[in-house]
Length: 440
Ligand code: NAD
Image 1 (cartoon, rainbow, N blue to C red):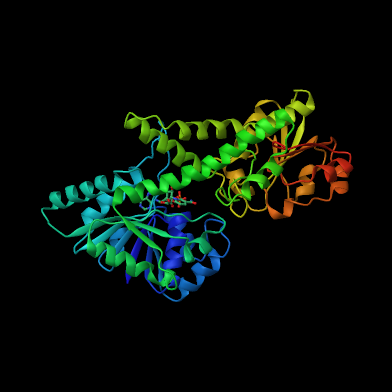
Image 2: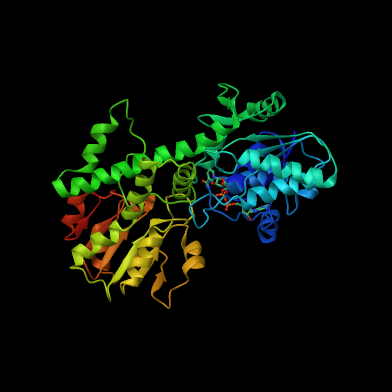
């Protein structure tokens, strides 16, 4: 089968490479000409473990192509996926501009029955708007061509995207016709040969499933952050509490880690967009709204903890930031807690020495060096040289067990702020360092 994927970002590129690996002929389309040119030359624009080799192998096998215009492949493909971005607009709603642009292009170009699959995360009702946009283009052309729309939200996690895509817990597909259902079943069969876990449903339910999943996961995180903050006030240890509740089979032990808040391209925007959908329908999503508020507050907590240990004045202090990406194994800094911390620290007159195993270039691209107030370093210890405090914000493996004596020797001050609760207080304090974590 031949398919096109429009939007070659984190989701589109992983989806394309994985479908190609399973034998489909995939054309990845992106309007970003520099990105397409890089991919054609074998350069991967994002950091995702295993992706470079997967792309190289399938491109060399002739199953994975990169172009800038859907027109270049529309007559070859039976299915077009949209994997373009749906960033938040100024009101917190999902901006559907890119998705509707793809729909219009699809409507202008198709010459035979084709299935349009929405993989981008979109609010309930978007598939209907996409269908209407395609119909309008066909009407302008004076043509009637059979086309179908399906919803296929994506659940992969950055950092483990290939594994998630290759062996998904489930695949959710919203369809309106038997033909679309058959096509989607065929596309996903190679991934689920032993245990076919494609959940077919109506399109609005598929669209809602994606938001409900992300909001549920974000709720667990914000809930634990609320519990952690209370633990701090009453003298309990959130790590013990986590183990205590996570061993309850009804609760389960995933997504119960307190810390400096969730970031990334999905949870923050999807939680906001779901709350917004509620408001648009005259319904206040009380839980979801609170999840977002708790998270915004939590992102400020590492700097608050630092202020408490320094007596409140950060002017002239040097802070080593360990971890810039919103989570390990990615260079993605969208909505990263580090951005909030950097903004606050610079705002209060501090200087920053930043280190991240892969997100340094991304940080430099976004923030530059802030007139020399952000210094990018080659190692975690170099970041700590002359620093008054070390603040850990991303729990990369290489940051998890520092040589505390070496660190103490490199630092000017003695403060460790652990935004992810990964260090052992006794170890840190044994090196004559002062330690602050979240709820422990
Ligand atoms: P991204 O920003 O990394 O990539 C989007 C790409 O689409 C960009 O390369 C952009 O140039 C391209 N694009 C925009 N308009 C275009 C057009 N008209 N034609 C062709 N290309 C166009 O985004 P992403 O992180 O891959 O997310 C894509 C969608 O998937 C979003 O809706 C997101 O919510 C959802 N999603 C993301 C993740 C994730 O972990 N990143 C996981 C699940 C779902």
